[in-house]
Length: 523
Ligand code: BES
Ligand code: MN
Ligand code: ZN
Image (cartoon, rainbow, N blue to C red; front, side):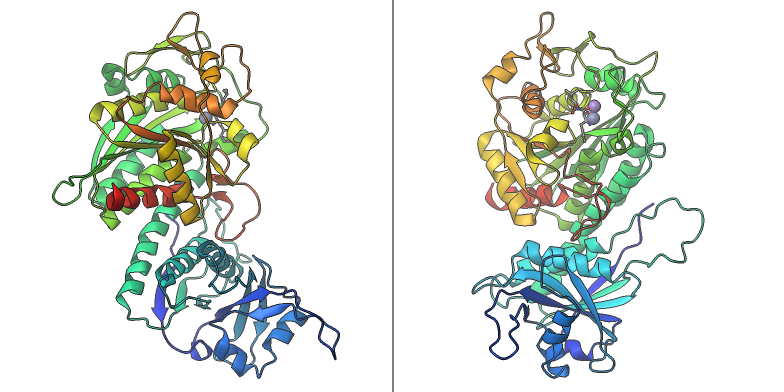
């Protein structure tokens, strides 16, 4: 099921002499004064890395690109036939926006540019990137970003078409990145890291993009378990009987409406020597399809609810990268999986459910199913013992209303929320801390049980916060936790942009990996 992957290697050959189908250079936008003789403003500036290409064009490259409409704006890719001036038959100029003063472009600018260029060059089999890479301490981060962007922009879901698509341009098969020293050990390590990280992102996208009839909980659990075992991780799968016997009331309740029974997958990574420091737990929402259940959703757009397992997919894939990157902290992942369906056996509004930790929850809306399965998984993670717990889920439409389709919402222990924000900024997966107000908790007081699953008056105000407030009840006091609501950023329904393709984005795999490495380094 995994989509074919692009290969990536480093070269230190002069880009003008590289035998590739296309060579990618960077261009900055510029707002200059009009030229005295031509009256035209210089709008373009070639980025570093493009020097030898520019020389081969006898100083006419910028002018020609401008005539072709290049502005240097982010996301723009202008292709130019080289007709023998350089070895590659095509030069592609990718926009980098204004040149940052005194510094190389930010890693996210490079990541998006590499992604956009590799996407635009689909159909070419071999492409080289000659983008501006700093030669100082920022060099590894810049190279990492370029490699990640290229490998993610080259992603395409295999899909289900029964006939070959003659008009379809296949993703670039091989990417070369021009660097000053291709044998440099730091650079080589960055490429290996980018490979592990982007493999995880691509795997997440594949799971999210898979049709929901092909990825019901037992199939999803099997697929995750097989991949994790192959990576050398320890895997335990609880089936519906084990879940019922284990008292996982929330997972059982949501799963009971479907003919495809629920699962809880637990994946553990133990570093060599056991790891003395902090223990990390990851939890991800694995609703393989969310109809809303008895509180059924409207038909319009419901198909996107195949992505309601994006949190579980991201966590599972992050574990595969952990197995490859081998950080010095123990990490255990908990993936509750269920299909939220309306049927004669569904749970219903009014039900009172006894959860894994013994708390009783009054169900008011079966469409708030994510928190039911996550509460059990969180409680189990706390019972097993952990110091930091990162949970991620497509939990609320309220996240999209509040923060949009690009920025995740973060709730939990304030210091850990700040750390998630810093990690997100570092990797280009923005996340914003949100509060857990007392009055929101008050609104969830139940007449009959310990807590209502949503606001008792079904008031949708502070909708995203209700999710965080509910989950907090299941985290034990000794655990620092962060809930990352990815309802918006986990799935991209618009046109491809930067290194994002249509469908699953793989958010927040790179944030989770950054956080794990942060905990390994700083406790
Ligand atoms: N999976 C949805 C949330 C969602 C919405 C994810 C849009 C991605 C895009 C979740 O299970 C849900 O249905 N939430 C309800 C909560 C409500 C019933 C309290 C919602 O957002 O309306
Ligand atoms: Mn729902
Ligand atoms: Zn859901």
